[in-house]
Image (cartoon, rainbow, N blue to C red; front, side, top):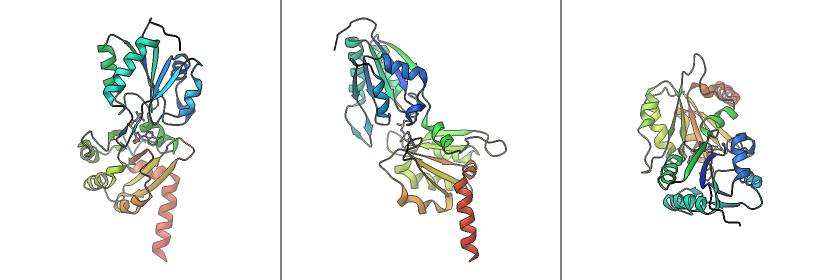
Length: 258
Ligand SMILES: C[S@@+](CC[C@H](N)C(=O)[O-])C[C@H]1O[C@@H](n2cnc3c(N)ncnc32)[C@H](O)[C@@H]1O
């Protein structure tokens, strides 16, 4: 690879939720022009086919506490590669500033005197429910939505889960599957027991999967969760807009009458 010393720069790019076509045009152009791409686990690898021949792509992903590099190492790599090769694209799943540690990376890079740029991505928090036809807001049903983590840095569930559950907003929970029972128990304390919820895994990808149930029956779905795949939980009456919900309700009523 040819070494250059001018214009070191790191561009934090959102790769979108999974479907390769759900990156922005601006994000794709940044990948095409990059000298180095550092990418995460949930980035669709097909996007890397767009790099120029001289560019190198480096996997720095983290999944379930299995880290190839620590966050500090990644920060250092971003600065070192930018100083050595020029333009580094830091490619992150969804949007780089939604549970992506993008702002921490940017702070470090800027503290080292390297320029940063940000290219937003379509967050899974929005794209995954929409791809299933579940609206996050709907006139007369939901006036807003909360996007929360289901697992904080200590491994516990966020206190925001209880606060969100006390609102009437749609709840969208990322990184919540491993704390699924804790989360649902907390929400059951505040929402009516027939509130529908959905678990959507591998959203926008060919192996996308959705499970729909009501809060009182959350135990029924535990065995169907695939803990190795990314998933979001959507809770609120808007989930009833999904055709599978009506279908399940009809089956339930039919089951009760025979
Ligand atoms: C570390 S967070 C990063 C979120 C990302 N920055 C975003 O905006 O989508 C990773 C979590 O996002 C959710 N997620 C990301 N991609 C997903 C997908 N295709 N389907 C379902 N959930 C997804 C999962 O909850 C996963 O554990």
